[in-house]
Amino acid sequence: MAIKPAYVKKIARTLMERYDEAFSTDFEHNKDVVSELTNVESKGVRNRIAGYITHKKRRPVA
Image (spheres, rainbow, N blue to C red):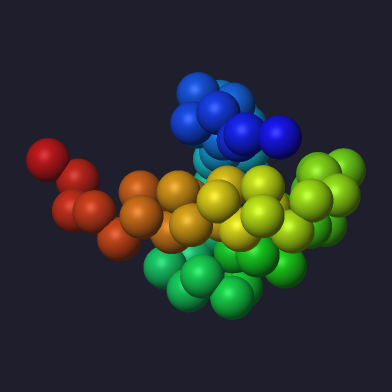
């Protein structure tokens, strides 16, 4: 099954809107938080969501 980027981004944006304070710039921490907050069973999808959130958190706000 291919993981669609739109699917990953949609879930990540929803999580960041609801639980922004729970995430940080640390990928390992974000993986654990995504596991707790979602029912995503696939390790690959979880890692992509956590990676996208980490990327967004590391970017400076313009």
